[in-house]
Image (cartoon, rainbow, N blue to C red; front, side, top):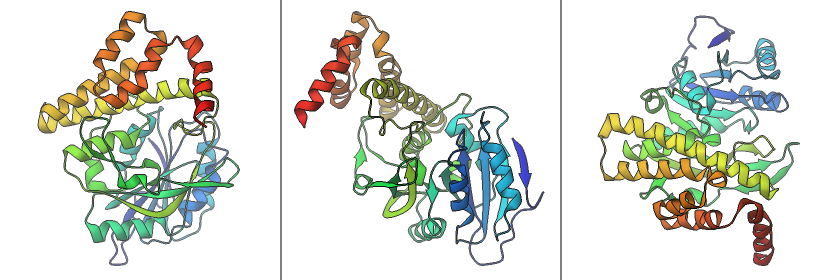
Length: 334
């Protein structure tokens, strides 16, 4: 990674009893939003803080803006600007930066979101008091212009995901903080994977890492057309296309986790269930292009009822009819 720093070859001084923390802001083609995200990073009240502004080989002016803002910064935090030599995807990008960081705790921020000033201070305080390995918080949703939409994930943090055939605690990557020791144990993926939190959920479950959540909102989470998430897409056709891509990314995250877990624990029954699930997701992400026989085999292959409920209508209804019928179904439910 290319690096620029305000204090070359110098690790931030620890002048207090507080542990050094890394606040890492990850950006990719977000020139429209990056200034507000960096302002949120610079406004963090916690000290001592190492701020890493990292760009994943953007094709727009995101990296140049990061350099400009870092050069003009005169605050108390040590700052470093990095850029990937090639696009790595979110998971690889995060783990690359972990290997270049020094903080005992690692706070993740996205280049299109805004962190509130007390975010690092509050997350680190909770992590220290609870001795947890991973924490994520609720967030306030804003639109592309920064206007508030609604608050999300107030109660979902209390739930457990069961899609894999076993229970995992949810991690909301855009609001997450980690003990660096957890992340530094993980190998860097060879391919691009966009859903880092899905991989961390699976790995933390099998490695018996403690995952906690706080309902205190610490991030303004921005919804816009370039989100990896499909939640903000109102057009049904585009939603389905994005959802298929999203399933493929989750499959890649599960396959990455499988590689880690094979090294750690071998193939027990739970890991075998995860292997079946990742294979199902890969195939289901291509459901529009499957022939009828392959679709029927996928119905039989579905590892649990929730996935069968998702896949069954997509398997038996042609793509050309699915969207209009889906619109009718949504209207009838209102």
